[in-house]
Each structure stands twice: as structure tokens, then as C-alpha cells.
Image (tube, rainbow, N blue to C red; front, side, top):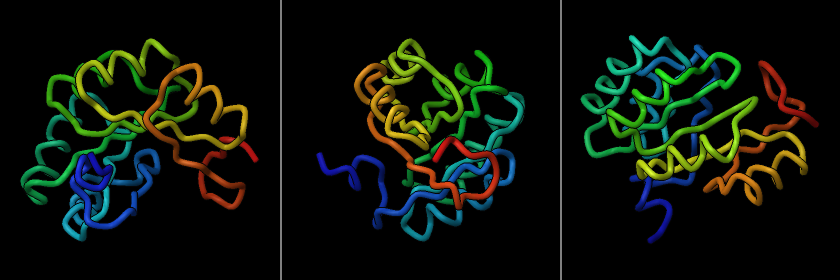
Length: 145
């Protein structure tokens, strides 16, 4: 299956989760425009409402969630699984067990990387579906150079 079809996007453009700077309204706007919108990090109690918002404002489009591993916990993962998000993007941590758990729920898994070593670990050791590469010019916290 073509990746664009799988993730219900018209253009190969993905919006960064940007921690808590990417509200569901932004993710929905990107999704409506044909890209992959990503809900930024928020409390698990707010995540379900954020997922619902994107689904209501961008029907038929994928829902992606940004999981910043220093702050994400098992409740975040459970919400992603229970409410069947399409894509999860993990950043600044993770492991093969987390990747396998999300993939078993039919969630595509991307990893934010900033180095070749991080990319090889995410793909070869964890089995991630894809990568988001971050350069040193990126705003916010850097994954590497």
C-alpha cells in the first residue's frame, strides 16, 4: 500500500508535533490541507479530546500524536491505543518494546532522530516504520547534529 494512502494524506508533508506548541486545531488544519497533522504533547486527560477534535475537524484524515518520551507515560500510550490513532511520533527516547506495542495496535511509528546512530537504532533495533530527521537548525530541543 502506498504510504500516502495508508496515512490518508494527499501531500508528503508532516507537521512536527512541537511538544505542547501544536494544538489539535493546528493538526486538524494541516490534515484538512492534505498533510499529516500531529497533535503536540498534552496531558493524557486532554489527549482523547484532542484526538476527537482532529477527527471532527478533519474527517477521514489520519490522527498523529507526538510523544515526548521524557514526559510521556503509560497513560499516553493507552490513550493512543484505545482511541486508535493512526500515527505516533516518539522523540527523545523509546525502545523496541514501545514500538512493538504501538505497532501491534496498528499504529504507524515514527521516531525523531538527529544522528545516524539514532536512525540506525530506530530502524534496525526498534523496527520503526519511519523517521523524522531533525537538523541543528530546528527550533526547540535538538535530537542531535
